[in-house]
Image (tube, rainbow, N blue to C red):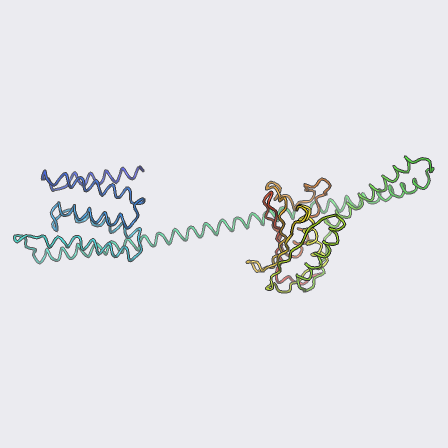
Amino acid sequence: MRPQDFVWLLLFLTLAAFSPERSPERHPIIIALFIGLGVVQVLETRMGAIASAVLRLALCYLLIGYSGGVNSSFYLILFLPVISAATSLELWGAALVSLAACGVYLSFLFFLNENQVISEEGVLELVLRSIFLPVVGYLTYELARGTKREAQRAQSAATELAEANRHLQEAKAQVTRAERLAALGQLTAGLAHELRNPLGTMKTSAEMLTRSVEKENEIAKEMAGFIASEVDRTNSLITRFLDFARPQPLQLATGDITVLLDDAIRRFEREQKDRALNITVYKNYSPDVPAIRFDAQLLERVIANLLLNAAQASPPGAVVTVKTQLAENGSVEIAVIDRGSGIERKNLENIFNPFFTTKPDGVGFGLAIVAKIVNEHGGQIAVESTPGEGSVFRIFLPLNLPGRS
């Protein structure tokens, strides 16, 4: 029971209490009928609009009949089913209930006895009472429909606001990431420049040491070899830092994206033989994708990197899908889909940040460079992933990228 349910019951009991019909035979019946109307009002949502309208009309018919018929003071109770139907049914339903209410009221004319005569003014009164029922029903229907329209507009505005807020959060995250990458790029460029000179000296010294030590001194030769290999590894890492930090001028040309994808897949298949991977690439290209402008060398590097990540996350013999289609926002979508281990939800926001990696021997620059290249193309990259089910990396490239070099 809701608080308003008690209010409804109290109101109907009050109407029954002030009924002008006080005969011992009829007054208890009138009270019971009012209680029945209150129960129907309380149970309306469970009974349904049509069933409750029929029950209300039946109870109103009995109530008016027991309280004087066409001269009953309770003829106004017929507004209850009319208004309820107008707020919950369509126009045809509200119209039928209004006409039925008019019929219920006018039906008592057939029960007039020979001594009851209705004057001309009485006839006009009956006509006015009958007309008021559909008028009130139609006005209530229009008001309810206007309220529903406003509610739908409010819901639509709330949905659009939520979508705009989501896009705003995504844009804010991209700006934050871009600012972080810009600052890191400046730091990396300066640090790499300062490190390369001493590293060159260290490698030269290690090579001279290797040539000058005695052949019998195996430990010294081994240590010098370690120094040279670690210097090479550090130099390789610095090169990757610089690739990430330096702005890379795009060499744009209009071409077929599927040709680039085929080249990237062939490159990946060559590399997976060296890495002992056993992955099959399935192609799902849409014929509706037009030619677009892109830097073939950089974008091929992006696709090859995503394919390698997908292969490393998949079990041997798995299938990785490369799919293209026109996106709803008017861009070209390239998706790399795997059914591998997936990415933990807590890591999704960080996978495109530099230095973030979950691989034991990873550096954390692969996806950061991928995101950087995609952003330089004026595009976006997004990821959907479920742990244990796989990941989908989506690249969105604009159809009309202005030419620049």
